[in-house]
Length: 348
Ligand code: DAH
Image (cartoon, rainbow, N blue to C red; front, side, top):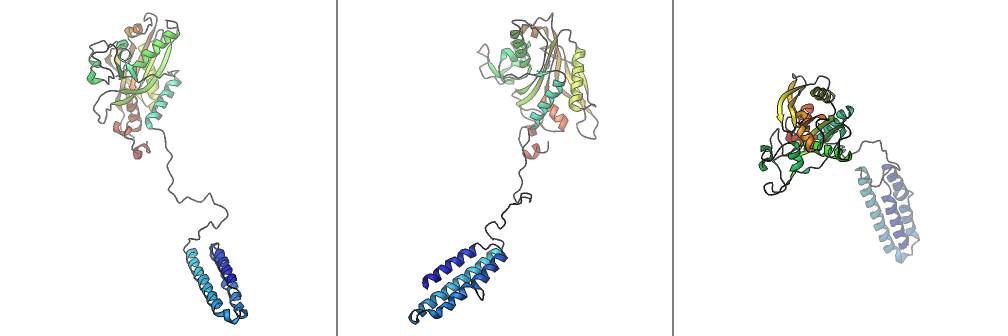
């Protein structure tokens, strides 16, 4: 009889643990603690127990009944509090809204998106994308671009030299302009032609450039430029201006305009600064914003790259990608582009 009581208690408690809602609890209660339940039945068996064992068996029965009743009250409390434990449904409704805050999808940085967009606008005009190294030598950053020894642009304080510029003949440096890619592209084309330029060149080259400038709202020690180079026979300044106007309209929209202001760069002759007429903010009048430099490739640059300036002509340009991004997206401070504050990046 004692063994039967132990077995009933274990069975009752195990069944109770599986009762996860009010209906299951009630069914369990009827089965074990009801008027015709198993506990009652067990109590009824006491009359058949031999007299000398009755006190012990009776005490054990009372103990088991109390334990089972206490367990029922405890489980009822749990189920009513919603802590039913195990999943009560045998399916999961995947359409129900989650209880965990959803995580935002990441997106590409605005500079990467603008760079791709710029390349795409130029691709529509037949320009390929060229890339080259960021660690350069001063041969490509200066000399072949007609910036000779002693030129102020080569001042070690204005450039990130990696080697000692005073002692080494060809010191390496982080490129200060993407114009280096003009030189590398022309040199490669001449190598491909077996020492001679055989066909026209039409490339844009986006990439990082480095200058030891103090950081403020419009300056950074690293920023991006997009360089352009077109070499063909009979290229004129009118081709340059038309290309830039098409570019400005392709990127900023049909209302954009361009203006060239005479300027000077060692690698172009004549040279110009390019301004674009754009609307910085909705509702404000359009403004002229300086985007970079351009001009007709200087014959000295052609010669340095092994191209005959009597046969070939060309134009080149170099713009700041940050400026183009800031103008289009009304970004007031260049530092926003590099601080990686997600509150800013998520809005742009
Ligand atoms: N490399 C110049 C700069 O960083 C920009 C530039 C001017 C590029 C004229 C050109 C050009 O290709 O023709 O300031």
